[in-house]
Length: 519
Image (cartoon, rainbow, N blue to C red; front, side):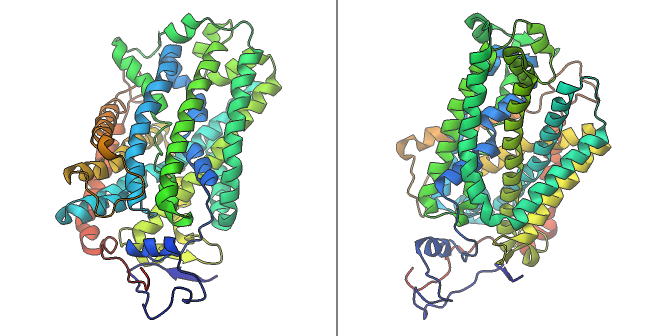
C-alpha cells in the first residue's frame, strides 16, 4: 500500500499550472491549506451533516447525559439535571463560538495547537502550541477508553435486566471494552471512506433516537411526576453538606458531555470550504445538542415512576425510568440498544479525531517518530500509523480498568480539564493580542468577541475547579478524585518532554505558507 509522508514544508513549484500536478486540480481549499503551510493529502469527503453527526456523538449531549444520569441523580437530583441542561449548554455555546472563530481563521486538522501557534507571541508560540497540542491529544486519546467503559457497563445493565442475579467480573467488562475498541479501530483503519456516510446516517439516528426516547418515556408513563418534583426536587446522596458544592457536582455531569467541542475542526482537511463549514458544524452540534439535552432531561424526570426510591437508588436510572414507564423489558432493551449504537459510533469518531491530531502534530515534528506518524496511506485514505496509535493508546488505557478501577478513573478524571486547557490557551493568546487576526476567517464574533472569549475562560476555569472535587464524602481511596494530581502530572511530563525533545524538534507550520502558483 502506498504511503506518503507530510513531514516538513513541501514546496509546490510555481512553474506548474493549477490543473497540472499529477492531474489533480489545486482548488481553493488546497490553496488555502498551502497558505497555512501544509500540503493537501487527505480526501475531502465530509459534508456538513456528516460533521454534525460526528460532533453529536463526540460531545454526547442528550445521550451522554442519559447514560451518566446516576451521577446527576446523586448530586442534586431532578432539579439540578434540568437546570444543568440549560446552564451548561448555554455556556458551552460561548466556548464553541470562540473556537469556531479561530477554526474559521486557521482551518487545519491541528485545531487548537495550530491556533495557538498562530496567535501566540512569536517568542512563546512553539512552547505554548506544544503544551496545547499535548493537552488536546491527551483528552481525546483517553476519551476512547472512557467511551468503551460506558458501553461495557451498559451491556452489563442489559444482562441484569433479564438476569438480575448476574454479576459481571472485572475481566469480562475489560474484554468487552477491548473488543469494542478493536472493532472501532478496524473501522477507522479500513473504512475511512465509509465514515462520512456512517456519520451522515448517525445525524439522523441521533435525532431519531432522541425522539424515540423522549416520546416513549412521556407517552408511556402513567402517572407523570408533578412539575414540583421535576423542577423543585433537590436530592443529595453525596455526603456533602454544602448545597452549592452538591449543585456544582451535579452540573459537571452535564458539562462532561459538552466537552469535545473541537471535534469537527480536526477534520478541516477532509471537508470542503472548511473556513465556512467548521463554524456551521460546531454551532449546529452545540445548538441542537442544547435543545435535545434539555427536552430529554425534562421528559425523563416527568416519567420517573411512582417508586421514586427505585429511581434514586438505581445504578442505571434511565433503564429504571423506561422500565417503569413502559412495563416492558423489551422496550427498555430497545432504547438501551439505541444508546449503545450512539456510543459505538462515538468511540469510532473519538479514535478518528485522535488519529488526526497525532498525524497533524507529527508533520510539524511534535509527536514521537514524526516521519513515521506523518505518513498517509493513500490506498486506505487515512494516516494509518496515527490511526493505529490512537487505537493502541485507548487499548492500553483500558488495561488499567483490569488492573485498578481507581487508577483507571484517575486517568479519566483529567479528560475534561485537559480539553479546557487546550481551549483556554489559544483563546487567551487571542485576547492578549487584542483579538486581532493576521488572517481572519469568514466567521467573526465582532464587537461581542471580547465578552464571549472572557466569559468562556471564566466558565472553564470555574468548572475545572469543581472537576477536581471529590463527588462523595467521606473521601476514601476508592472515591477520591484524582483529577488535579493527574492533570498536574500530565502537564509536568509535557513540560519535561518540551525540554528533552520538543524544543529541538517541534517547529510548527510554515508561517509564510507554501508557495503555489495562483495562490
